Image (cartoon, rainbow over all chains, first blue to last red; front, side):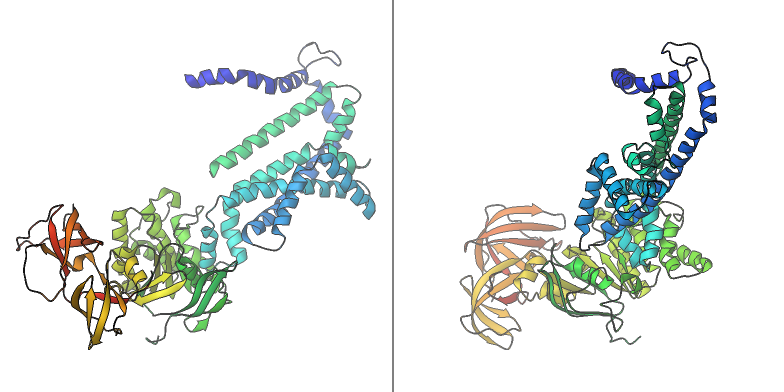
Length: 255
Length: 368
């Protein structure tokens, strides 16, 4: 009973949070090109979206970058987190601080600095700089997620593995990795989402021959919000909800 | 296996953490098949010593040898010793069987033999049907036994136990003490047990090593440690003590003529003392004899007058706190004797306190 009442009390919060998205989803089905008035239900914006090859290419590019950068960042991030957790080496604190700097620094600064780096190295904007940049800004988030999970463990568990004859690699494979798996998955999903919706850093990294979705949408919106952008955004909301659901499920399953 | 060679030998072992001395000039031989306990207050370096043997730390000086081989640079996974951790450290993502099989799997033992040995180990620790459970679904005592089985299954040269019973309740603890002792005898494996609990150490061990401030104070059987402590520190650490002051007169043939708390008496001691040397007489509560003030039994023993301050009924014993006239407060334990009609002393009674002849330990005076 009191639970229901609490839900009601939270209603304003939910309204505040979700009204914009609900409006967006609703208008993606609105059978009117310009008007904000409801003119009936239609799938046509979704159909038109499917035939917009430019947008579809950008979407595929975005997915490719997101999956690749999330994977690379996760692999590097896990190794780094385990190294930071297990070993006391010279410069350990510096690495930790450095990760924080990357995490906290404004995207625009990161974007410009990466652009500068690639220009200096003579690499043209496109796939490789984009992938590198996305991996860079995802990495600290993976390290933070995995490191906090490692810190929650009994450190003796890893010692026990070594004590029972496991080499460094065997201990990592058989004990550490299975135990941090939920955090690894969460780190991957987080990276994927971060990469998917990044505009600012991507802005500096993309060239004319390699467009990504958020930038494509951005340039479309410059000429007014078209209903197919609504449709596209609705799909992205759907994907995000699914990902959040999966990550929550993963975290719950293994405490 | 030659009986005289120690299974573990520690030579001049020293350990520092950030320039703080944790262990100093430590020498110890641990023999094959014995149950040896490292006893000491928290922070005395006993866990560090265990971790040095296991290989989790490397010593700043000296050597650790296992089975005649110097082990300083050998990582823990290549040492034939296994550890039972205080927190058990079971792998939470593996079933009990997989936890047990882990060491065998790492050693590359075939699955059939592995399964067989896991079954045997589970039976040994009395958990035959628990193989498929996850550690989180076991009670503390069961987890404890899984941890022991997981270590023992690898047939180590020595089993290192780091306060493994400290998380169990008193009753279970007593039972596990007996089981561990049995296990040690049955398997013939050397047990190196770490504890800060003196009773636990005495209940289980063949030998006890008393550690304090990173040094070995005394090594000996529980009886030796309790009855003949080498110094006041050990005496105080391994049980209640009554310490009386005195001064030596002359020593001959194991008999020391001395004045204790103003009373002339003869003390039995193998140590020789010079005349007028300050001494301390260490007695245990159960060494004491207490009689009413008007008792006039003739005895060589000194008679120290005092007043009963408090009496505590303990079931099998009466404990009494007596304020001696010399200003000291001592604890006396009297065992009930069915045949004898002992007079029960009450608070405020005037009494004479003495001790059984020859039960005293005489130590030089030290500021400890």
